[in-house]
Image (cartoon, rainbow, N blue to C red; front, side, top):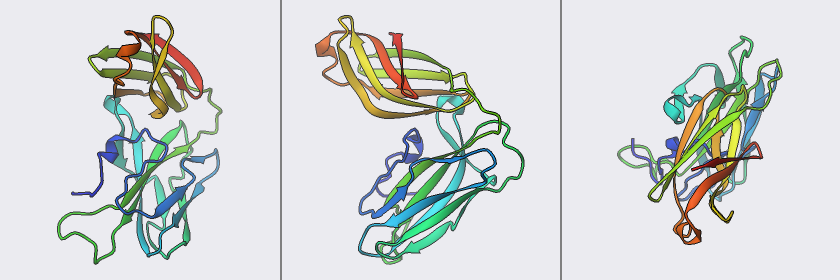
Length: 238
C-alpha cells in the first residue's frame, strides 16, 4: 500500500497524536481518550479546517509492545462510529469510541485510533491509497480497581551517534516518556528529545533508538541520560 507523505507512521505510535500531511485540513481533539471504570464510550471530535469537503476514515486497533516496539492488531473489542464521514468545510463531527466488549476490564487495555484524511475521488491515485493526513490517538480503558502509577526500569547505551533507550514498565498503568537529555561529567545537559518521546504500556518493555545531536560531543562525553516518566525524572548512567 502506497501512502503519500506517510513517513513510517505506524512505527511512531509513541506520539500523543501523530500527523503527516501534504495538504491535510483535519484536526482532532482530544489527543488521548480514557475510558474510566464503568464508562463504555468516549467522544473524539474531528474538524475540517479547510475550505473544501474532507473525507475521513476512523479505525481502531489493539495496541501492545511485544518485541520492544509498538504493534497494532485488528480488534473487535472497541469500535468507532461513524467509521467514515465526509465533512463540509469548517464542520465538526463527533466520533463515538465504544468498548463493545461487555466483559469487565481486568487490567488496563490500550488501543489506537487511526484517523485518515482521504483524498476525493478526483484526487485519488490510480494505484494504492493516498493519505493526506493521519492522526494516531491513544485510547486507554481502565480497570475498576485503582492501580498505582507504573514503575520503570531504564537502560541506556550510546554507540556512535545513536542513543538506545530501553524502558521496562513493571507497573499496571501506562507511563508517558518525555524530555530526554544527555549529561556530561560536569552535569551539562544536551536535549535529545525536548518533548514527548512516547509511551511504555503497563507490564511491557519499549525501546527507542534516537540520533544524538551533533553538539552533544562538543559539550563533553555523555556519561548519563536523564528523562521523565509521567513527569518524574529518572537518570541512568551510560
